[in-house]
Length: 189
Image (cartoon, helix red, strand yellow):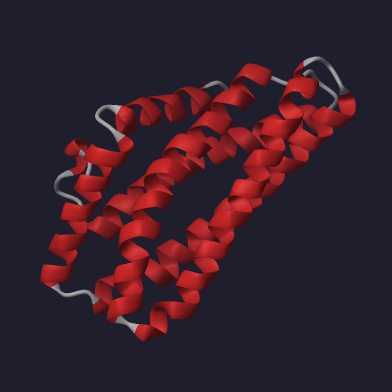
């Protein structure tokens, strides 16, 4: 687990990360509404949203789920197979939305109204997907993990999350993206 959340269980840590992700999702929704109202896109802010989703949501959070939690759940509880399959499919769909935003952003930033609408579409699609996805994980998958994983499995999971953050995500990255989420959420887009 990240150094600032040592007391959290692995699923509580992921739930806390969901709260951070939802701050950026809210900023995405506000920016999409801003674009739909015919206003100039905040290209720099959208670029930061893309960076956040790629580096924190996907690179840190989804990485822990895909490399550690999901395989453990599949091995421990066969009933988890279908929910995990759905979560993986939604992670892939989220990546497509982020790619679409990223691809349209340069033209949108120069004032192209069609590219700006493509960015708005991507922001809205990603936000809707992530809100539903997070709800499923928080209400179905994480409670399942709490029921089927014993204390030793949870301790191993916590240790692996710590390893992923240390070796794959990198020191200070978690904190950097928490601050970025706060800045994007406070920007009032």
